[in-house]
Amino acid sequence: MNTDIFGKAITDFFNDKYSEDITVQSPDFDDDQIPIPYLFRSYDEMPLIEQKALDLSYGTVLDVGCGAGSHSLYLQNEKQLKVTAIDISEGAIAICKQRGIQVAQSQDFFKHQEQRYDTLLFLMNGSGIMGKLGHIDHFFSHVKSLLAPGGQILIDSSDILYLFEDEETGEYWVDLTQGYYGEMQYRLKYENETSDWFDWLFIDYNTLQNAANSNGFLCELIVEGEHNDYLAKLTLA
Image (cartoon, rainbow, N blue to C red; front, side, top):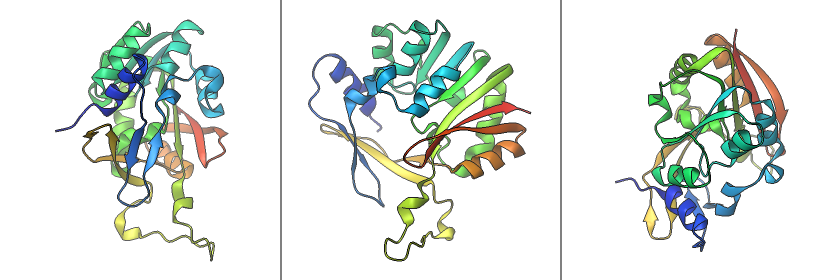
């Protein structure tokens, strides 16, 4: 049975019960941490990629995987945009509402069909929601159904090829029989609870651009970050 790890951690922090961070586990790499305070960051505390995405957002916005709602709050309160924040975490959405987000829903993005939006926002490795590269056509099909005429998709991701570099030779060792190298599996741990394993996709820009083009989208590289990450803007051709 899956547990609402993000929801519990976000709720604890919001209620001044912060005691530990979320541990991210992968079968192939060492454990990592997600600092809970980072989920409550202000605009000034956000990396350039996120700031640029918020600067470019306009019209009606769908913030997908909104977490604690920091991006939505900025767009709603500072830019006066009409924002719908969605996340599969019921706990996170409850806190979004307590933080003042006017429209926040606990919902799977691929089941969201309520209206069309000028901006679809996918941040904090927004491509992860696809799970696997083979799901990308389904992703593009669904976003087409949600985009208003002239609308845009703002999505960030990272090229994680560097994780497979041999430090001595500088060569990359990727087992092509195992599928695309950006397909990862993770599970989350917080206090005494552990989530199920889930798929998460990191996608290099060229692969994203090629898939976008084949699905009728124009893809523009907006900004590159300091850690092989980037922000892309997609519009219907």
